[in-house]
Amino acid sequence: MAKKNGRPTKYLKKMDKLFEDSLAKGYSKEATCGIADIHCDTMYEWKRVHASFSEAIRRGESKSIQYFERLLLAKTSGQKIAGFNAKDADTSCLIFALKTRF
Image (cartoon, rainbow, N blue to C red; front, side, top):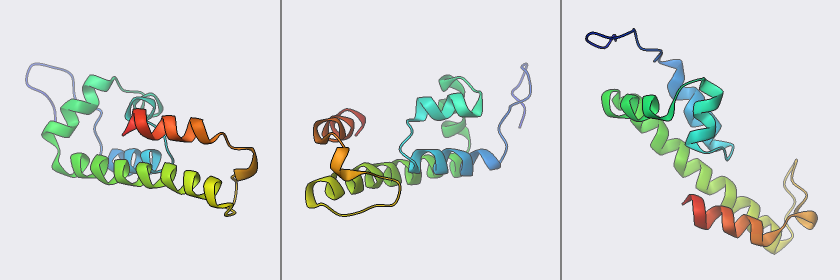
């Protein structure tokens, strides 16, 4: 959809998946905007205009919380997670990420 009196939007349906997947990996919305090569204001506009994009962001944010909580629980309980060395992880850093991001 093109804006009135403006340039065509960069929004494509595949942006829904890109944002949801990136957020699920623990990246912030701002970092994901960098990955998508858009300004954060553009993301907020897309959230307002495209219901599917807004929902993808909500799902991705929930998955992002799960990502950090999973790492923290692994650290505190000694669980093993592929690609994550709980023994060397900084518990304070994980808690800080959860507190400041969510």
